[in-house]
Image 1: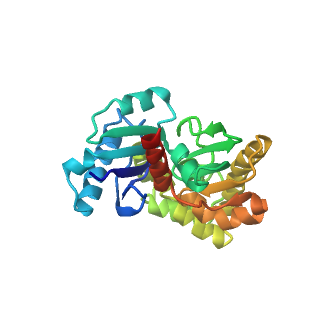
Image 2: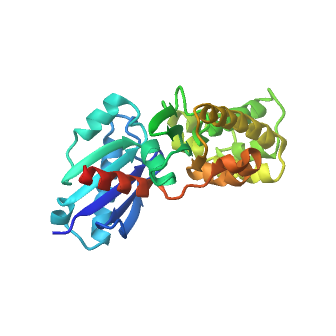
Image 3: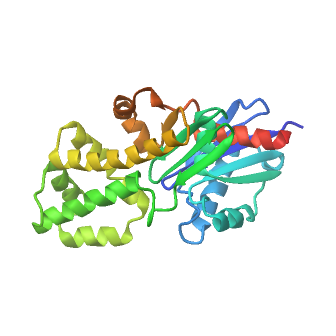
Amino acid sequence: MQKFYLGIDGGGTNCRARLANENLETIAETRGGPANTTIGDGSQAYGSIIDVSQKVFEKAGLGEKDMANTIACLGLAGAHLASSKRDFAARDYPFARTLVHNDVETAREGAHLGEDGAVLIVGTGSAGLAKVEGKLHPVGGWGYHISDTASGAILGRAIARRSIEALDGLCEGAPLTQAIIEKLGGSTDTMMDWSFKAWPKDFASLIPMFMEFVEQGDPIAQEMMAFEYEQLDQFADWFKKRGAKKLAIVGGFGERLLPLLKDRYGDFVMGAQADAQHGALLMAKAAQQN
C-alpha cells in the first residue's frame, strides 16, 4: 500500500498543508486558520491542523485509510516551548506517525534542502535557526510578549502605538499614522477597543499598509523601517558570528523585505530554496527511513 507524507506549516496567521507521495511529489495542498500552539490552550491550533488535514486529503480524493498510512510532520509556531511541543505531540492524530517540530526547524530544512545554512522567519512572529557543520543554533522565537523582535506583530504594535500618540498630540503625525487611525476606527476609543481584542496576527495585518507608506517615503514609515533594520542587523550579526555562510529570509513580511535586505546584506541573504511545507515533508521522509 502506498505511503503518504503530510507537511504542515502552522503560523500565527494561517496553517498550510501539503500532501505528497513517496517521491515527495505534491498530490494536493490547501490552507486553514492559525496554528500557534501557545494561543489559549492550543485548541485553536489543533483544530486548524485537523481541519486543514481533512481538507487536503479530501482535495486529493483520499480517505481515512490513506491518512492512517501517512507520516505527518507539523512545523508549528509556539512549539519552541518544550511543554507545548510535548503536549501537542500527545494529542490524537489520524496518522500512522506524527512528528511535532517548531516552525523554524521545518522552514530551515526547506530553505536549504537539509544542508547547512541559517533561516530567519519574519512573519507574524520571528525566529531564527542556523545549522553549521551539522550543529543547530536557535535564536529568538520565544513569543510575542518577550521576543519576536523582527516580527510583523511587534512592528505593527509599534506603528499602532505611534499612531495613537499622534492622535493624542504627543508627537507629530504623518500620512501613515493618519491612515492607521482611520483603519482602526478614527478615534482613541475605537483604537483602544481594537487593541484589547487584537492578537499578534491583527497587529501584523498593519504591515502591508506600512510597506505602501515606506515606498512613498513617509517620514514615520521610514523611522519605523529603521527600527526594523536594527532588529534584522542584530540577527544577521548573530548568525555570522556562529559561522553561517547563508541566511534565508522567509515569512510573509520577510519575503516583502527581501529585495531591500539583499541591498543591505549582499550575497549573505537569499530566498528559500523550498518552503516550510517541503521542509516538513523532508523531515517526515527522513523519519520513515530512520
